[in-house]
Amino acid sequence: MTMRHLFGPILSRRLGHSLGINLVPRKTCNYSCVYCQLGATGKTTGEIREHVPLEEVKEDLELFFSKPHPETDILTLIGDGEPLLFSPLGELVDFIKARYSLPTALITNGSLLALEERRRASKRVDLLLPTLDTVVEETWRKINRPWEGLSLEAYLEGLLLHRREMEGRMWAEVMVVAGVNDNDRELELLAAYLDRLRPDRIFLNLPVRPPAESWVKSPGEGFAERIRRWIPGIEGLGDEGEGKMDPSLYDTWQGWVRAVALSHPVTVDLLAASSRISPEEALERVKEMERRGEVLLILHAGKTFVRGV
Ligand code: SF4
Image 1 (tube, rainbow, N blue to C red):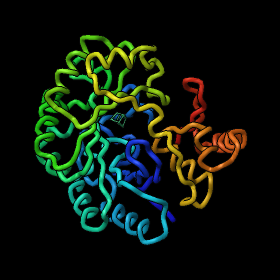
Image 2 (cartoon, rainbow, N blue to C red):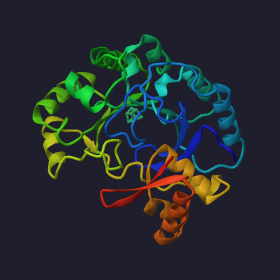
Image 3 (cartoon, protein in one colour):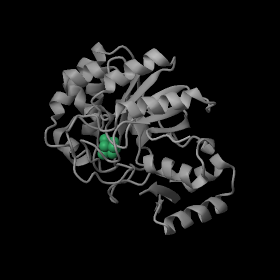
């Protein structure tokens, strides 16, 4: 089955069997986060348009659900970039709600929720997962490196408004980078904002996958305890996103690896476990793919990751 804009399903601890829907081409983003696992954003963009044809996305979904398919619990709107840059988002959510009985999730950096039209487009999403790393302008510029047309103040205000207007639940995600947003002043201000936002859940994320900038590191031991002094209910993501993935939808093992690794770097161990081969054999196969220029192998935090190119 050829899926141009679908990815997975991936077994995620938080979302269950999540079928990803890619709404923008690789690295089409209005941020260039220093921790981005897709690598650096060449040029940030603020252009909201139909970056991929809506009709193709609908066709992919129809094809996926018309045939026997792996267990699917949720449809996750995402992108190899920022999905709120996809203009017909609201239309797609309406289509999904009319056709399938599955809930939708939207993983976003949230910055475009400053715009009333974007809030309206994402209002019917069942679960919104916005990233919120800082409420301090200087830190926002350092860690997220936003497109020039964005404003932190408007984004924070837009998120508060959306929280009141939206129909679904909100799970906020905080990515913490050592030496940037892990100090007590940052955490105190973030905690005060989160008190106003009142998301249903808050998750702590750490740069465990290869980041865009090599200086990016996770805060040291004991940080999880320290952040809980400011944000008591924050939950750890752990190995979230490292759930097993089903290769059976792809014609070849290599095709599956390319599709997976283009969306996010994945460990050789996970590829091996998901396809029931030994880690040694998986490593041999991805090395061969690297020789053909199809993927890149990166050693990070003691693990070998495969990144799509
Ligand atoms: S982490 Fe997300 S928001 Fe940040 S640059 Fe990468 S794709 Fe964009």
